Image (cartoon, rainbow, N blue to C red; front, side):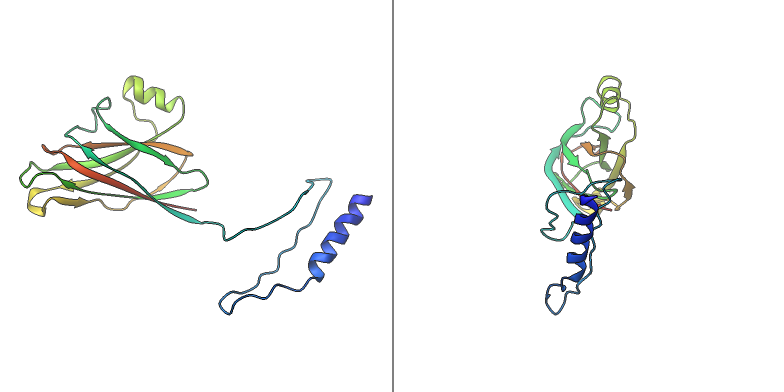
Length: 183
């Protein structure tokens, strides 16, 4: 019974307090905290330190990628890990430059493999891609040495992905992947 009185007292003090004064461009929003001891007890201090991020732009390191096909899984270039925990979607953008003025046209791309077992085991031991995310760009000599992909939107199903690059031109290419994470 004392908890119920404490909860009501807390609720009354929160609702009776005037909203803080904000800048001209910000609107105050009323927030109420209700403690339901039988369902879930809220304890400690509740504090919001700043706006909760809804999006995040990540850039994976630039990598020089020698010619390697997307099916040559043991030779793909590991470019790092994409941490996607807390986000539900990703827009992937791939860009780069072929390191020669004259080259055979091809595709430069990234394959994102979920960084969980048994998905990684299937990839590393058998070269099988389970639940991959792919983005690629056409590299054509008549288009110059620079290339970029479309920007596909993906639903994320895992908290972390390993990023592998490939390059089907006949020359090395510098490749960068951007991931715009959202909710």
